[in-house]
Amino acid sequence: MAIEQPATRPGNPRFSSGPCAKPPAFDLTKLAGAPLGRSHRAAIGKDKLLAAIEGTREILGVPADYRIGIVPASDTGAVEMAMWNLLGARGAEMLAWESFGAGWITDVVKQLKLDAVVKTADYGELVDLASVDFNNDVVFTWNGTTSGVRVPNGDWIPADRAGLTICDATSAAFAQDLPWDKLDVTTFSWQKVLGGEAAHGMIILSPRAVERLESYTPAWPLPKIFRLTKGGKLIDGIFKGATINTPSMLAVEDYLLALDWARSVGGLDGLKGRANANAQAIFNFCANRPWIANLATDPATRSNTSVCLKFTDPRIQDGATFAKAIAKRLEAENIALDIGAYRDAPAGLRIWCGGTVETSDIEAMLPWLEWTFEVEIAAQSVSA
Image (cartoon, rainbow, N blue to C red; front, side, top):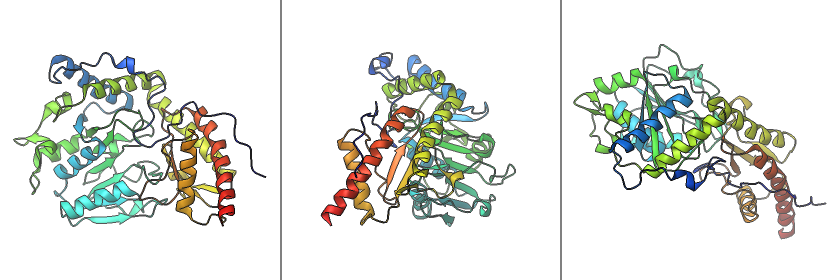
């Protein structure tokens, strides 16, 4: 007998993994202080940009001697900037367990044409971290947004490494612990955990990374939009709010609002707690139902932000068709928007659980997921 349609609906059905849900306190009227129509190089613009940089430092606990810059083209631009500026000085080791990490491999091997060591794992798995050679520069994602697999901690990274670590942390920053002493370059985008607007990225450089920038010149030409040095010295202004290209001051105001909200919920600890509670609600749901499971096979590597799920019921005839039908029905009911698995990932669902999502909305959505599963199983049986 089919279960009844649930009575309670999520207050906010937005569970997209990027752009992600706005903070619960968001209101367009709160952006009225944005200096629209003003130069970002005017004093007010520079002050806002510097506040975004220092607010990031404060909440993430970034060391005082690390440089933080706002860069164009979201996290993608920040990762590309790091790779094009820093790689080539020594061997490179590329680690990937999902689509974005695979993209960085393509760029390094086919565009920069480096003879890099490439280590990959299937979706749901993690590469053998113990096998990584830190005499090389190592590029990896902390949290695989499209696979829901993250590194469990930074213990696998030695303190006395010779190479640099370049970490794409876009769906980990503001939700997971990032050990700054183990990370030389860290990147993320505003539109992930804090629900900011798109197109702006952040790049965080350790003193070791700055030393590399000032002592090494890549063999390839660098587009202006990627350049971090001039005359062999770091372009200091980038890390004080003098961005490489024109930023959206409306997006900057939105990010400042998100940082204020983060402070109001307890800063990084509060944000981590919210994400953990959201993800745990889904983990508990899956543990009691044989038809659905976490894509990440090892509980220690399961993401608390981009939770990826797979359907395991043997009655399902076509996994991809079934998963798409589930996502489509939940969207039609305005219960969960944009939760289909990433296009390159295995068929299933991807539910964003970052701190801007309310646990009550996750808990209200899950009974609908079960109802939708039963409806689609019944529909499949009829069509057969």
